Amino acid sequence: MTKTKNTFHLISLGCSKNTVDSDSMAQLLIRDGYQPVDKAARADVLIVNTCGFIGPAKKESILTLRKLAKSKRDNQILIAAGCLTQRYGTEVADQVKGIDGILGTRRWMDIVQVVRGLRKTKHPQPLYHLPEDATVGTDEADTVRATINGASAYLKIADGCRRPCAFCAIPLIKGTAVSRPLETILDEARRLRDGGVRELNLIAQDTTDYGHDLGLKDGLAILLEKMSESVPDLDWVRIMYAYPGYVTDRLIDVMASSTQVLPYLDMPLQHAHPATLYRMKRPSNIDWVYKTLDKMRSKIPNLNIRTTFIVGYPGETEEEFAALEEFVGAMKFDRAGAFQFSFEPGTTSEPLGDPIPPEVKEERYARLMEIQQGISLQSNQAQVGRMLDVLVEGFDNGLSVGRSYRDAPEIDGYVFVEGKLAIGEIAPVRISGAMAYDLTGVPARQTIQL
Image 1 (cartoon, rainbow, N blue to C red):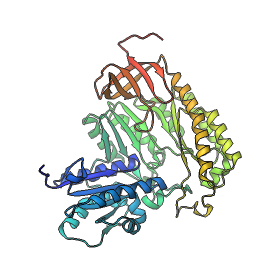
Image 2 (image 1 turned 180 degrees about the vertical axis):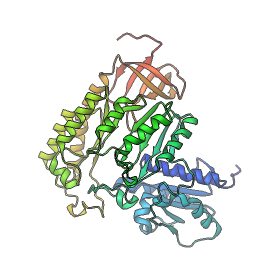
Image 3 (image 1 turned 135 degrees about the vertical axis):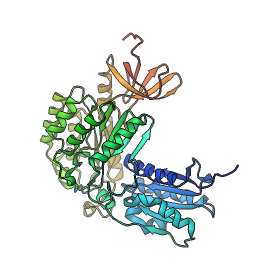
Image 4 (image 1 turned 60 degrees about the horizontal axis):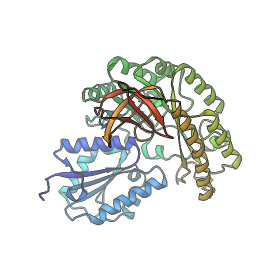
């Protein structure tokens, strides 16, 4: 087998925001004459874009690097990039022998420079490239800050975070929130549409903070309004990662009035007991949550809400957890996920330690997800008989597989449709059945017996 000259193999770990950085690095490498390959053994350059958000993600990143380092040939170079290296640089190299280069998340756009330096001269010690400059939106090397998967794409509108959440290491890794220029985002939306993208998922650490550093009030609402004017033929626009307390009346009105902006909101709440939220340094006004969600549900027909919670946070009593259970049962979120608290040194929660035993965390997690599973099933059952537009993403065993407006990529459910529909099509589907997380249906042109 002949190996192609100048090849790279890139593994992206963690969230969709990390995947966007990975794809941006790939754009730059391809522009420099490299070709991506799907097997590490065929690559000249091995890159792992790591995740350093919580303990399990850090462990996965280290294990992935060790596996590649162990099988690495003498003429291959291994680069550890991303969140884990930005935060723990030298420690990563100490834990994984065989790493040639260390690149932080804030200077992903220097990947070609790092590769050239490593291939030009042998480095007995890892080459570190960890400047902390905030260059978001000003030094992106003319890359499209998006990840495309078929007819769907994630588009990054900002990076970093200025929120004080005690459990979160993102500000330590990414720095404060920096919004990308509005016109740049709109230009990329047009380019993505022209390339066949039909669904745009707007992402940032906090999308509702978009534009604050640009002097914009209601920046996300303004961006959505401008997007509707600039790319009115883009079918779906989805909002991810909203922050409690910053879903404004103007944003609600835009969601209610725009046929392009999906009636879907991803808003991680993290907990429901004021004392727990106070220790988390999160918004603790639960009354705001009730009032705002009631307002949204009354103004936005068929609104679908996703949220996320943390169980086992330091000091979480059984009473506090019971309040979370009651809240989830009362609010009936269409989608909800949960994580068990992961102790992160360096965050402001560090002095609290990690006193909740693992078995208690696991038990609370199971209880909460059991409640949510029943709610999700009820929410799905309410869709039976409805007509939903479905973005078709694949075909297998006689079924087309896609997602409705209710399903964000990767984290929500699917709609399984009888027969073969064109991939990339948005097809009307009549829903015929419901499971806890997925739906079944038939194309609208067919009839079904309910």
